[in-house]
Length: 169
Ligand code: GNR
Ligand code: NI
Image 1 (tube, rainbow, N blue to C red):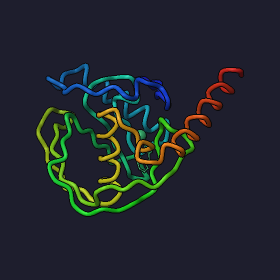
Image 2: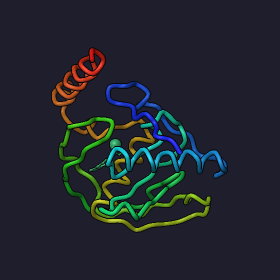
Image 3: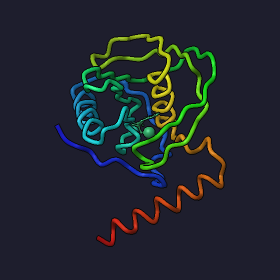
């Protein structure tokens, strides 16, 4: 197991589009396990492969307080969505920023699990929000893309400044 580096906005690699996983093999499961370790270490609710500079189309998620409800979705697809709600979101790749984003309230997702078996899930509430956030990552999209360009420019400046200060240390 290993803790992977999480890319931060405005890193252009966060704009990479993930490629479908052709076979769920040992190497993929190794990546999934490292991503779980990285997500728990960073206290995130989810982590997409794009965020750790992989172009595999997969993400991990665990919204439980006890970190005992891991979910890994490979080649996820939203097959239906319903409703609309605006809720605050945050992102490990955009640290310290919390802004409301409009998302579907109910979704049905189709994917492969960690063993490569097909699954379908009906989700609502926070899990539904997180799955939409993670699938966006796999398409090179960030939650701040839904904000005004002025807000996004301010966030970019703030994170660039923080990165420079971290470099100076
Ligand atoms: O840790 C996270 N919290 C969160 C809160 C509201 C909506 C989405 C998320 S996902 C985020 C972790 C992350 O960056 N996943 O890509
Ligand atoms: Ni994120």
